[in-house]
Image (tube, rainbow, N blue to C red; front, top):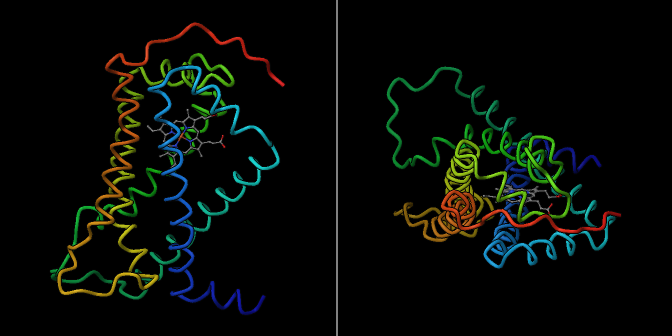
Length: 228
Ligand code: HEM
């Protein structure tokens, strides 16, 4: 217990926690994005998928709990590391001339906050249904078709996916550095893996609200679902 607490207190400990929970997040978004592509197969495929996820409710709740713990640890470690780095340099540099910086690095913190807001809204929208105009349990095809045909809502989804892409670009690179997979290099802009991940995930997710707005997922007749 003492060793665990010392690990968490240390700056490198928090960075490792961020890296490991970040990897959990990356695996989750890759799985979730692949599942979303079933929209192109239609209402039946999405319904079967939603049911498959609910095969074992205890397992689903265990996964949900693991994801919540990962997100909370990631955000708390990020906040504490930000406070530490501010305390270490209470006054900003008079002249800031970083050797390498990217839009992704500059937006990582606010982008992270936007993603947290998105996740809360998204769960209320697509899982709980409280902020959805016409939510039907176990009919994710129509929930997306109806929920994303409002351009403001679809626009917010696309904006959040742009933030997710930037977050993964910077975070994907940071995780490799923290865990020592990528060594400091003379050409730090060689971040192809992180870049590829960011583009695939942002474009793959954004395809759904964009295709909905383009009319590719017209509302289907209501499913006759048995609720249990
Ligand atoms: C355009 C992008 C996205 C679309 C179209 C989408 C679609 C959906 C749908 C339809 C559900 C409900 C599934 C069901 O109840 O069977 C869902 C649930 C969820 N989504 Fe997304 N999603 C998107 C992006 C994201 C992102 C970026 C994250 C996280 C970083 C995320 C996290 C979640 C979570 C945590 C759930 C709840 C799962 C549960 O029931 O426990 N989603 N999403």
